[in-house]
Length: 294
Image (tube, rainbow, N blue to C red):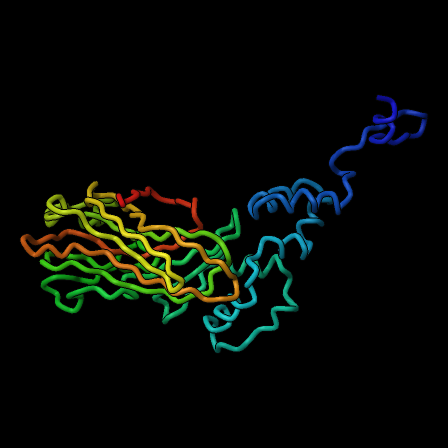
C-alpha cells in the first residue's frame, strides 16, 4: 500500500503528500487511452486537461482511426473540390484529414457520396434516386422527381402508379476491408409540410399488400443475397435491408449490383417514395431497419 501510494504521490513543501491527478498523466499514456476510443470521445476528452488535449492532436492517434486506404479516398476529395487540383495531404494533420473525410464527399456529379462514420471510422455511402435505373422514370404518368428536405440529396423519386416496378443500381468502389450492409431507403405516402407541421398523404398508396417486393444483390467476387418483404408503415422512412457483403481488401475495388422489384402485372402499385440506396458498416443503423425474409 505504501509503495503504491508513493508511486502516485508527490511531496509538497512542509512534507505533505500530494496525490497525482489526471492532469499529471503523461501525454503518451493519454494517447494510449485515446487509441481505444472513437472520434467523438477523443474530442470530448481533449477538453479534460492538457495531457489529453495534447494527445488528441497527435497524428498517430488519428491515423489509427482512418481507413487503410484513406489516401485513395482523398483523391475523391480533390476531384470534388473546385478546380480538382491535387492537394498536398502529406502536409495536413491526420485529425484534419479525418475531419474532411467525415463530411460528405460527393462524386458522380453529386448523385453519390461517401463519408466516414465518426464513431467507428467505417465508410458509409449513399446513392441518390438519380443514380439508379428506374423503370418508367421519364414518364410523368408513373414517376415524378420531388424536392424534399427529408432526403440528404434534397430530392426523391415518387411513384404515382405503375404495373412493372423495378429499381436497379450498381457500385464499383474500393471499400476499406470489412463487412457492410446494403439498404433501400423507402417511404410509403407523400409527405409535405403545412403550417410548420409534417403531414403525410397515403391517398395513392396501394398494391404493396398483394405481393412482396423482391430485393437482391450480387458482387464481383461471388457474394449474393435474395430476400423479399411486404412494404408497410406509411408515413415513415425505413431502411429495408437487402443483405451484407464482405470487402476483403482495402486496395481492390468491389462491384455490386442490386435491385428492388415487384413485377407482378396483375395489379398496379403506387404511392412510394424512393430516396436512396445506403451502404453502411454492418451494425450501424441510424434509422429504423426492416430486415427482409430470405
